Length: 266
Image (cartoon, rainbow, N blue to C red; front, side, top):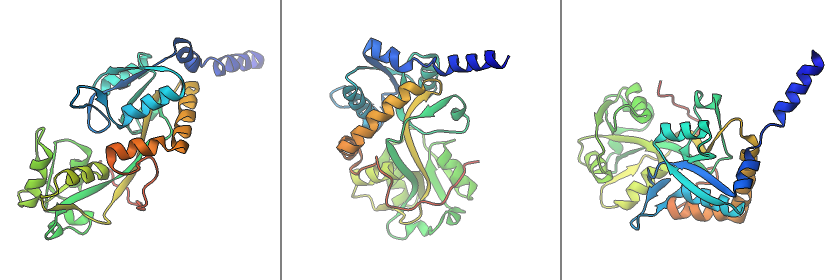
């Protein structure tokens, strides 16, 4: 019985042909959204671009492969990877406890953390997360950011598909007090609308995180090959170049800010 079990174990360990399949067809099939700026979206020329998209294209070029994108919502992307309809998904994916049961992430292509936008004139009276109590927090309903704000006692002011200028203007004029979101996305929003008197609250950062490409956990051979290509692209400076194109800074390395605070939305 011991010999039989050992043989079965060896057969399983050598059954991962995920890289061989890609190599044979000479093409990567990548699931993405086409709607998530700046990770995956259509530019003014109706071309699919974005940070994750461009990094995936660079990986394919490094491995001498063609690349084909399939567009789905987030649930569809996860399902496509799980069913083998896509080799991996590229759409600013992080790893939740639930997702980690079936999937794995590539080596990180983006490091970030969370922050708060407040009024320039008085910091909206906020010096810490605890100061959110009684403040009006702006955002879309049921997001993790709004759940965190409400957890600290803020009143939720919800929007449906509002523009960045509306969000920022409402903070500036006092209709709301604060916006919680990803630091780099907030930095881009403020940079694009410099005349609105708001800012990112300095030194109140939390939830350091990283994102990468999403793989089916069974496809470790493919993941290792992609990770190798990402390591070369990082060493060559290609990831830095793509990062600066979309974020104005190098998000492919850990930020200088030390982020120790972890805040759960639960």
